[in-house]
Image (tube, rainbow, N blue to C red; front, side):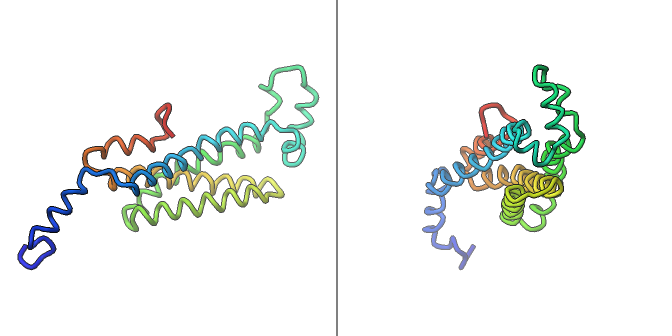
Length: 185
């Protein structure tokens, strides 16, 4: 490589120093990725808790609330028999599933950074829409945006982490962000 970046050999030696080194940037990226992965679990817990709150049900699902009040001393199995409430809960998961496949095309064509940014913006907009929701449609659209953010993140972030990790721990860094493994988020 005459005249190239490694012509004198000095840059080659310097590049070799970072081949197995875990940098502070990598550690911060792993912590941020783990926190981002915990959003999926946090949302799962929040949506389950919110759908059983009386104030939420009164505001958005009054029929479910009335049915819940009639059956106070029974199990919760039949109190929540509402297709719209089911759509509210499941819309996030379906959106995450389908956008994961779309995210692979964005990642391939535009790069990991673009895919992560799309997911971040989508998640932020979904959270803002859900926080300011005044009707069921806003809730469901917000949940779909949250799901799209999760789908993009679950596709692009493990790829990003494994590519920026030192070669020696490349596989282990992808496991840190894998939401399907127990104990990892």
